[in-house]
Length: 176
Image (cartoon, rainbow, N blue to C red):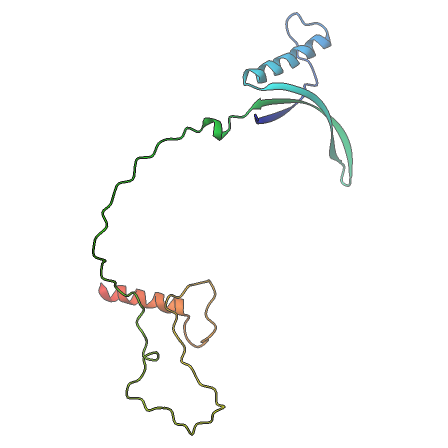
């Protein structure tokens, strides 16, 4: 199905003087003919003339309806599917896979001292109150994400994204 683009131009309201044209009707027809030939040369096809209402301001608070005369033109669109030309991609290059798998390197983050089990730490005494809540150490975030909001867990300390940034800057300064 062909697609079209439309162009709406104001209809001429007054004819222009030209050699051999004496009457107002002839002058008006000449202006209309020139307009249609100009747009037709650019590929626009005349469709119809329309008279449409246009609400315009009149003074500070009121508005009036003016009737506008327009000419409607259309032309076929060249869509991207019509102008698309597929191109053949080159065949993929065969890559030999190694027979032995590469040794795996663990990318685990270093475990903090609080997370390591203490070997020589004494077992918990059984005489502790059984209904006392167990305190669990805070686990640091392996990969902190800066979501634009400061950490509010530790108000006295610095936020974890800022901590990471400060450590990175200190390392680069000490390397220089």
